[in-house]
Amino acid sequence: MSVGASRDTSGDSATVVTSQRIRPGRDEDYRRWQEQMDHVVRGFDGFQGTELHPPASDDDNEWTVVFRFARIEQLTTWLDSEARRDLMDEASPLFEGTPTQEILSGGAPAQEAVTAVISHEIRPGREQDFERWQEKVLKEQEKYPGFMGSELFKPLQGIQDNWVVAFRYDTREHLDQWLDSEARERLLKEGRDYFSSYDVRKIGSAFSGWFRFGEGAEEGVPPNWKQAMSVILALYPTVMILNLTVNDELDSLGVPGYLNLFIGNVLSVSILTWLLMPLANRGLAFWLQPSRARSKRTHVAGAALVALCYVVLITLFGLTVE
Image (cartoon, rainbow, N blue to C red):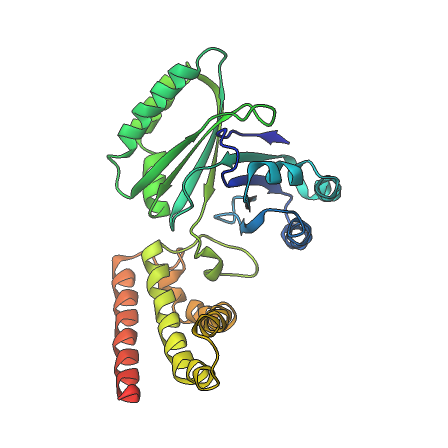
């Protein structure tokens, strides 16, 4: 397994981004195997969470998994563990080629955005040139719409040799606009003097797990503004109903506010994940599903429908509360 790059900041949080191409027809086998991996990794000290990102389209068979740990030492303990090696060996028939991974140590927490993680193999002796070149890239990126920030992760001695750049845009469209731009193409030609190879990984929005279309596959997720509008549409009535029922009942029983809030959060997230968001996906598929929402009229009509639902809900709850 080839590895990417990191920054030497022991004690900071650590993230590993793993990408692998899955053989055609083995997606469900891979999902089941990944569930086993998730179960095993939870038993390791410092584990904070994992995210699974399916391919962005039917033509792309590359899956990306993000694992987060509290410290780099805890992450490397898991990466080097016998339990993980056994699971990787078990899954080898599912993979096309060798999986790749980038380790990011420290850095700012992920924002609600689309992130690109680019691993570079630097030519010997050109490290400072690469850093200066990366500053030029950053200045150019800042001119493009939706840019939210960039971080450079240096190699971590004894773990990996590559350098990694992670940058965020507010939507996949804005990210792709930068990745496909003439300015970036020009800069890449210049950068070839400093690195011999690079590899790009895209990581979608944190909402993307609530926006799936088709049977077990993701054809791509809606823009963040549509995701946010849809989540609010489902979240607002959920929170209001819980406040008027469960929360009031818990208050009357003398349950402490902090525990009341926790129970409400558990219930609201569960209702969204398994009930309301699937309903919203079906009801608003004409607007949310990228392959169907192609015209400006569709974008406007869907947004107007959601806004109208907001008004109806606010009116109903306003009458109920009063």
